[in-house]
Amino acid sequence: MFTRLKWVSFTHSCVYIALLICAFAAGKPEPLTFALGLAHGLLWIFMSLACILAARLHVVSLRLAVAVAVLGGIGPFFGSYEFIREQRRRERHESGAGS
Image (cartoon, rainbow, N blue to C red; front, side, top):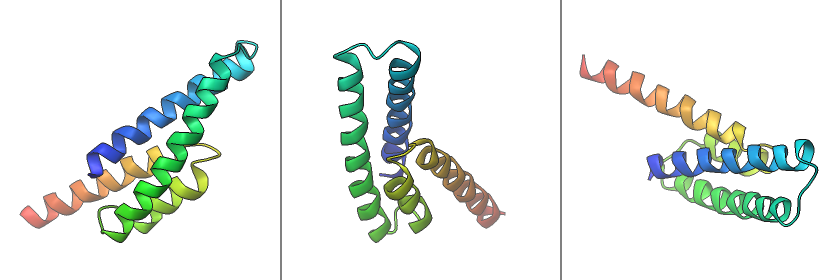
């Protein structure tokens, strides 16, 4: 579940980058700007709910869930960064436990 959420978070960040480029650099072409904005909003809602549930199931940390749910509407990069951070923390913990 963690890996799937991580990749959806990265996808959400890519959609958001495309939305920013479309809205600010490409002159707001419609309906592309609308479609990307809608995709960003729906992905944020989905990711928020999924990460809150994952935090309750102890799949992700509360910090990661808060980053996605609270900061994800402004910039999903916070959530993507937290997924990378948590994955590195898990890898350090696993390599330390195996020694």
